[in-house]
Length: 311
Image 1: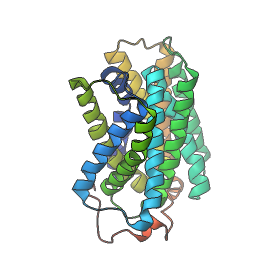
Image 2 (image 1 turned 90 degrees about the horizontal axis):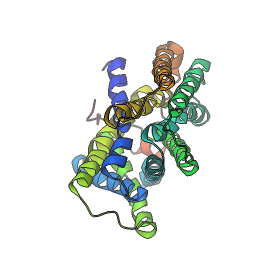
Image 3 (image 1 turned 60 degrees about the vertical axis):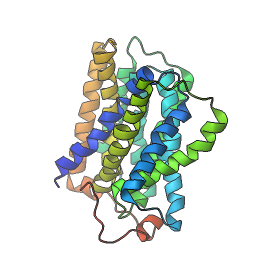
Image 4 (image 1 turned 30 degrees about the vertical axis):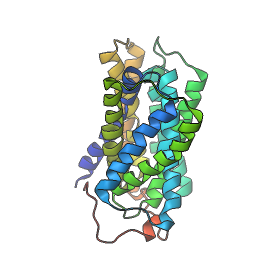
């Protein structure tokens, strides 16, 4: 499969994630954030487990629990807090630091060369989403901003460690394990700390099905597939598409005003993604996607000969 196809399939994930903010605020208002994250992760994970019919080995449970906590339990809980306390476009743009964090973490944890051009593209993306934040309706709640930054840091760490620990495990199986692990981590915390959610309505059910099905099971399988095939640094830059989608949805469906400055910000973000992919397509950038180190738990337990169901 060509690199351009890999890029397009991976880019579908953050494009869909940009709609999370609209669905959360319009279809699921008032739901406790950790309960929302739980209901998004655990049912989807159990459904995928029933499809792949494979459980982690004893060696794999530790890494899987950590990844499930970072990529889902912690990331989603903080993300829902940000989505509920900030306008959708603003909440989405808080994840813009993820690309830069992934570049730095990949350098330290995977030994991936740190390209000045890639760093510049990531910084340009941060500047672009900063312009998006400057809209007239962008009320900046401090707790919401902190939650947004924290969610970006959790996802960045999870992205890099996923590249390190996935090995030959198929993306669908890897997604099933992490969603289930993240849901299990969230279950006692949500039950202990949060009140029950509102009475279940049809729109709530539709929102949960959307977030857990397309917004989790499908998109994260594509995301982990992209991390394995393209590398975390290349994949992370595609995450900048999420705030652009969120702002576009707010403009189209919520009648939110889009200023000229915000339009410029969106163009800067798209340009930074394009430049980042161009840099990565060069031979030096391609060599920057380091393979997963041999001997790690997930790599040791991989089943030889099993190809990804998504490839």
